[in-house]
Length: 429
Ligand code: URA
Image (cartoon, rainbow, N blue to C red; front, top):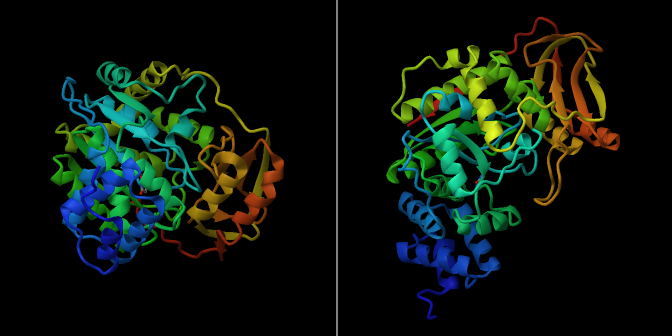
């Protein structure tokens, strides 16, 4: 096959801060997927994009080319509208678990294609796999059936969706090019648009435990993704939400399932409930079913019924006891006063080191490993109080987990007023 472009010309165009043409972009994505553009050439182009950026047109064409590299799902045969949520990832972010069944209660189908954790942020599939019998892999037909019957599916994305992204994301991971906003936006949105959801709510996390450490970058990422979704006909909105402190009181797979079930039973930590309800309201609005009393469905058992139906439909036993780790160790307050900081990144790395996360894609995770949090910023603490309980099956991990927390917990003198940022910082539509 004669190739329409030369990879080096495409790379130097971006290196020299010129715009790539639509044809250049379509060719380079297709040729990379076919193996004609080599990994070293694509990584050089990704670095040029990271350094020099892309225009809105370039990002839209890049996203469309990644979608065109694979299949597109179609939910138009369903009797209900669809809405999905994507979080850019954080520590203790278990919101998908209560959110998907909660939204399904109101007649909106939630096709939630999720991933596994890598690094300090957890993955929804890893969390759900701590439920006895639950299966992440579903055929497209089984997914459609479950969406029609139950209304909510959380499952692994098949390999047919945006294969160009799969290859490019793995390359970015090892070439220092993950952080390019045009590449993050096109990576996330190519999968969401190919998935075929009618409405999409993006939860863009900001803070130490998130990809985006500051509000300016998070706003730019959110704006870029909302524009891509809207241009592709998906009703898209983004919330910027706080990730400077872990969400809720747990980080780790089975621990987070336990907390999600507490939320579905009408209890649970206030920040998890607040964000779950707010995202559900946004999803229902975006799907044309707004104006409902979402919180009531957590209190009266309807969301719990939908959760049990969703878990059972994928082979899980929602009533089976969750796995627990073999060993625990407390982290205690070194002084009396007010907890003034509990750094999300430090807690995420500690949970990861305890065995809740993986260093390489193929590594196993421990279902019971993770961290229980007993105090959040603003709480009064006394010297010797347990602030955290660390859980693992392999106690030799405690030392490195405790080291990860060094500097991540701060205590101010009694009486100090500690301001926590709001959970929802901004909304971008
Ligand atoms: N998640 C994705 O799917 N892609 C990125 O590039 C970053 C986060």
